[in-house]
Image 1 (spheres, one colour):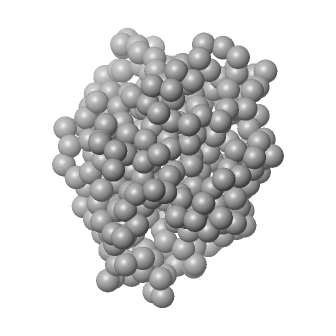
Image 2 (tube, one colour):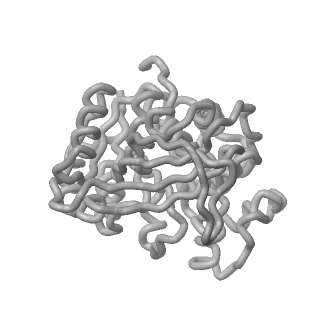
Length: 315
């Protein structure tokens, strides 16, 4: 059976739960917890716990954070390929308010040392039917090599263009078979690559023909999935390549959830989507997206990021 290869970041998350997100100059009281995170690791954990054979390629320091990563990959059955770095393992400071909203500060640390040649070697055995999944918390040349390795093997390449403040060029977009921005990332990509400026808060309210047209301008040859939080998601295919769907574009409503913490929800969606695409290639694309939406909703019902990913039985 095909597998998922995730290339990206591992962070040790430091999480403060507060009544309201902090404002400049504020001192707040809250509760503290720590645990594993990083977009790459969150997505790898989601893919594995959603049932797919999963490899995680990253860079780690020589410290307790690295020991945490190695132990968790071993316990969850994730094949870890970690480059060694003299920098500390990556960290993140996260504030979560009473409504489950969050703000995050990242310290890249070892993540910034992930080298392109290491990624190329780690993905030397990627095969047709596999899924390669990457984000933007690692050096862009390493991410480009990951997607190139996937394309060379005729694997499916998923690019989650997060975080939104990382600028990528058109050649990076062209490497993606599926692009998965949230509304903030979508607005940033439109401004950079299409020359269209739309407020991120207005994306969910755009009508379907307008969203579809913008997606086709952004990624003419691939599928775009815009994740819209409580508004669900929007899917746009090229008219000539609908991936088993009857419609070239459509919306899917958000799954109901008893939200505790939205940290990592987008990562849950991406990891579960990759797992579904790898394990069940016979399904229409809409079924993969629905599965990912259900999985992401369940991830918000627990506090945390990587460890909040739900366990599903292996296929």
